[in-house]
Image (cartoon, rainbow, N blue to C red; front, side, top):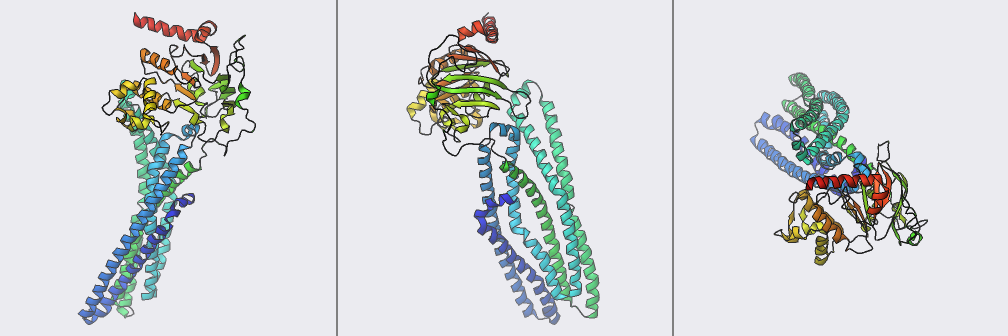
Length: 602
């Protein structure tokens, strides 16, 4: 929790004023029993109604002042807690944005969502209650004991004995419940994971009639979450009855002892009434303190979870400045096509120009995996080339292109872009040069224009229309009533899969990148639209290097070069015609797809 207090620092004034006003309110509350005792001992005893009325008006004044101080304290506490939560949530979100893909895979999306929403909300509530009650309740409890000593020392000893016993009970329950609340939040992560999977995969679940199984799985996790909540709740609620029992025992002892003192004349009736009021105040404040402790336990558990995320390293290190150092310049890469190409082009000595992307003996394994997803990749891609990447499911196609914008770091070897190791680029510098269209097309709530301008906020109307034409999205926009300003709902759910794919391609093109990566981004397109798209891409600036990942040989057969992957290794490289002669894997893929097409046409 200590490392989170810095987010409360901007609200230092509010954090001081809130408990200060609460303490003033508490001080006024401690005066009330003395005034009541005075009314009984003097006014009632002598039947002096004037004295009683004056003291009664004084009690009303104390109540009004106390209310004013309480409202003021609440205002400052709310302002500090809300500001603290907003700052923490902003920092947490910003920190998560810097996580590498590997780190996100490791922690889990559902856990991060819980921590940035539910955990921060618990912390906000905890800070609010701490500012209002953490000092006030103990102040009242110990203040009541001190005031009791001013009335009757012998009777006040009951307060002195009760308070340490109560503190022991409270401490024991805190010690037990804090780790349990951490487990509760862990179970909440599991519930959220199941919920998220079901909502995102609802179509698949219904397609396989798995609703009952999924409901049962959710019920199991929800029941585990509920049982853990009930278990820790039962322990926490022991605070209230334990407090009431101890205080009531103390009250009985007080009446027993005070009765003798009144009978002997060493204590007046008004003093007993004051002592009882102080005991009643202790009961109320201890109940509040019990509630505060439960909230604090939850907040402390959440604070540990939030701190754990903030302590996580982003997973990638970036240089502070542009350091060329030992990096070679692009001129050093003006080499022949026969060099560094997984499978050499025999006898080809044609100079192709500057190298855009180079893989130097690259291997990669996902975190926790014992096997490499990619092994010994060694090839160069030249500026302006269109490169097709094909292979069976799980062969490593997407993994390969994810190393280029440094979504992941190679386990062994180096990946170089424009003559520089991707690790030598400053944060955000490399991705500015690369346009990526991922496998899963994602649009964000807003308008079509808003989504297209993600790559270039200053894009002109002409540039937007050009990108739409190339991506075959112009007809989509034209059919919409709002054209470019047509509303895009969350996740782009008001667009079909093919429409979303074309619009995400347009978004990448608006960026006008030097390297364009299309990661199986035309899978939802029909063959005719796919063909138009590939032909339109050929009209782009000749210096743009394009990577097309596809399951279809038809989508890549016109590429300048095709890389064929099998089980994480390059087993063939060349043009479509060359691979039909030299690569068995490619021939098998091509034959199976042409066979399917012939059967469909028949």
